[in-house]
Image: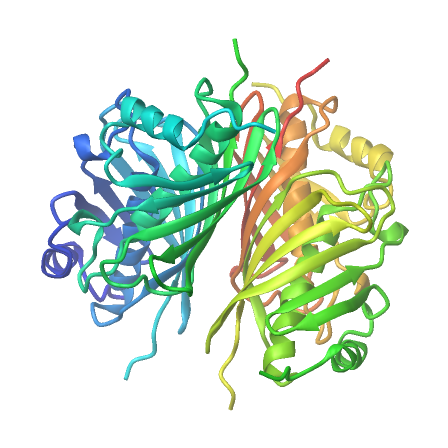
Amino acid sequence: MALAMDRNALHVFLAREFPQVVDIFRVEAVEERRIRVRHIIDERHLRPGGTVSGPTMFGVADVGVYLAILAMIGPKALAVTTNCSIDFMRKPAAGADLICETELLKLGRVLAVGDCRIFSDGHDALVARATLTYSIPPER
Amino acid sequence: MALAMDRNALHVFLAREFPQVVDIFRVEAVEERRIRVRHIIDERHLRPGGTVSGPTMFGVADVGVYLAILAMIGPKALAVTTNCSIDFMRKPAAGADLICETELLKLGRVLAVGDCRIFSDGHDALVARATLTYSIPPER
Amino acid sequence: MALAMDRNALHVFLAREFPQVVDIFRVEAVEERRIRVRHIIDERHLRPGGTVSGPTMFGVADVGVYLAILAMIGPKALAVTTNCSIDFMRKPAAGADLICETELLKLGRVLAVGDCRIFSDGHDALVARATLTYSIPPER
Amino acid sequence: MALAMDRNALHVFLAREFPQVVDIFRVEAVEERRIRVRHIIDERHLRPGGTVSGPTMFGVADVGVYLAILAMIGPKALAVTTNCSIDFMRKPAAGADLICETELLKLGRVLAVGDCRIFSDGHDALVARATLTYSIPPER
């Protein structure tokens, strides 16, 4: 199955629709039902001691699942997050970018579910995992 | 039971430990096992269309449970979030502050669990709910 | 707003559609968006030491939210659980029935979200909390 | 690293500690941090129409993570579930056993986190996914 949007199309979409975050997210690889997204970390994303904040980890998972859905169904849908469960397993490495590996477990007509594993760039140990559900509104 | 930290002590703690967020969170009320926290919204927290971002909603729940724990046990603990489940129910009102009502459901020796209900300031309808678990490290 | 199904109608529905569980669940009270359900505990629901099993606690939350939805929209819908997050806070009292207090936080056209608090009958301390999402299929 | 308990030791443990469920769970394979468990389905686990019940799916995930922990740390620990998030993705095949593939994502001194993927035996499509946290009490 062909992707509805490739890496370049996803970047163009982000730049147009979410200009305030386009400089911090970068699609590293995308294939059917899988995407790898980098969250570039700067001081806005850090807590005292240099650790990456919880909302930042939530944010990269949210974007990862969103882009994985768009890659499959195209830019037309106004998908919204309805649910997230996230487990924080280890402290992220100080100042390292986050790498989020997302797999779409379900892509239904109404709901999509994606599973994320989040790492500090250059480290093997899992920092966090998350599962998110998106609601896909019917087309008019 | 007396609180270990009142509203003023929590603000002083935030200013010292988390200077980068002290201007956006305000404790509105705190009592035994309950706290109400305001997240002041500015353009950094908005998505296109003026809606408050998901990470922002995660962030106020995370801070709400953290401060509810500190109010009970004092500033000495290095509690860390281990788990969060969050349900997004309605779109937040454009540009309104978030109000997060937190209740501690469990405050054990090792784990604490808090439940949050998040509203747009001045609106009755629930925007999101979240439950967070914090791990409380043993004192040395 | 009138309920689409009252306590008696819910019991009749359970007896017809779920005969294998009708003897273990009892609606204690139902009102708009709220329901209290008793799970009668027998030895099938116990673990060694007399404690109520985790699947039993999941089960009463699942039934609580389901019946809360049916009370509002009537018996015609084939709602299915899509997501559950559950926190186990304390060991249930040995051999006591479970009481599950459910509140519907959202009742949309497509998704409903219910929040549950589970107690051992006759005890004040919360045993578990759960949030469940149901998907409500469109009517044909 | 050697396993603290192999397949046979896990079955002996289940038979001694959980005699009421030993006939329904079978360890199919176990290795470091991974286990595959079969839940043998009989009519007690079915809902009308022959579908496997939600509590049954919760149950196999709960047992899967528990046994994965015991395989690593041995039978001495009284680990208890503190949290579960579960997503139900597809209706299980009527009457087929459940197969639960568990991976331990974290095995800390105090908390362990396991990730489960649940299938109907003989089918490729994912029926459900779950993440569970266990609290591991300190040894006395």
